Image 1 (cartoon, each protein chain N blue to C red):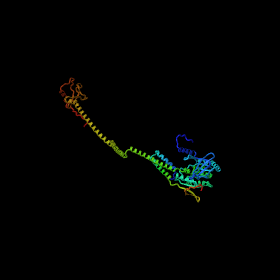
Image 2: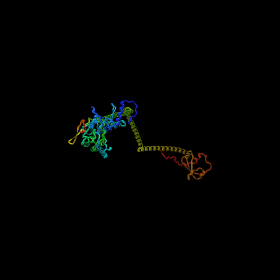
Image 3: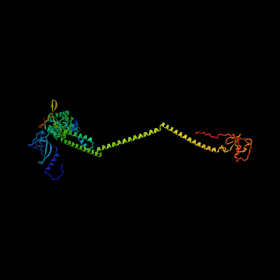
Length: 80
Length: 479
């Protein structure tokens, strides 16, 4: 599972669950998709559980945008 | 919207609650103009006032958090345009306008400019629903184009934290109002497209007056949104503030909070969903395995004890081997017999043997033939002997032995049976038993001869010159 799309993974997980519940599969096939399903569920859970999001402020330094950690401060106005 | 007639007895609370629901659903968004009066601000910080015109009035409240977005400071007597929703304050049974935003009346020039640009961009097809790009279900990263100081970014980040904390956010800091704001916003959109670190762009700004929001009504922003390859979500102002940016964007959120909800799926929901799939997968697999196990068990029962089966096969194998051995032996024996038979037949037909046989046969035949011939000869001899005896019996010699004589004419050899056959002087030969006599006829008596006396005959004979013939027979064969 290289760069996997969460939505695709979720959709595949749904599909696999339904297939397995239909029970029309051979033992080998069901074991195979079960394995895949568990992996997908792990992947999705990991994606959800990933550590605290990073919020970066892109600041211009020497013409380049440099990400710097951002902690919001509730200002009074909108601008500046 | 009239509620159905209901004769059920309700409590005041129940009724009031119903009225509140009714009002809130019927008037979720209203825009109303009027004059502010009775303005007061208790320690809570909320602003309470009455909005009135010459004929009616309505209670209104502006809660403290909303006041951040205000462009003007409300005061008694001020003619304002309020946007908000209707609700009921149940403890007092009072309905009131909950104001989201208010501004001074009369932003005429801006309105005209807005309408003109809107028409132009519409004709260029920038609002075409077909141009709208779908939002990613779960973006890898979010580009937030906003002012880093301000309530909007806080609101957005708070909701993002709630929905899906794992998604990183990068903030493109821009001024969101005043000179140059539109240019900065457009540049940030382009920059986010260039960097491509994010999968969606969110334009974010809290509520404000028409003038404050104006940057989002400028064409440069509209065009930047239109050419963005990344989907753009616009969350500018409040529900009621529709900007050009909102119209061009791929999706519009009423508030920064709503924008966060729009671009991020509900993580808790997803977690439940995934946990649910996980459970279902496990259950289904367990059912599967149980089913297969049952199948195997059933099959085993049907098959019987596998070890017995093996034994059974071994027995069958042994039996087969025996049968095969016997069959082979039998076959061998059969072949041997056949060979022997053929050999015998062959030997029987050996030409040497046949020759020997023939020789044997020949000898046998020869012996039989000799035997037969001897028998035949013996029989013939016997026959001859018998015949000779009989011949002897009738032999004249025998008669002669008894004293008779044979008389023949000497000259002719004719047997003389009658005296008349002779004349005197004829010579006759008288053959006797022993020898013969030649005599001359001296007298012929034609009278009766016999029975005379045998002495007569002897008288007449007297010839001693009788030729005695050797009468011994000679046999042709001599055994």
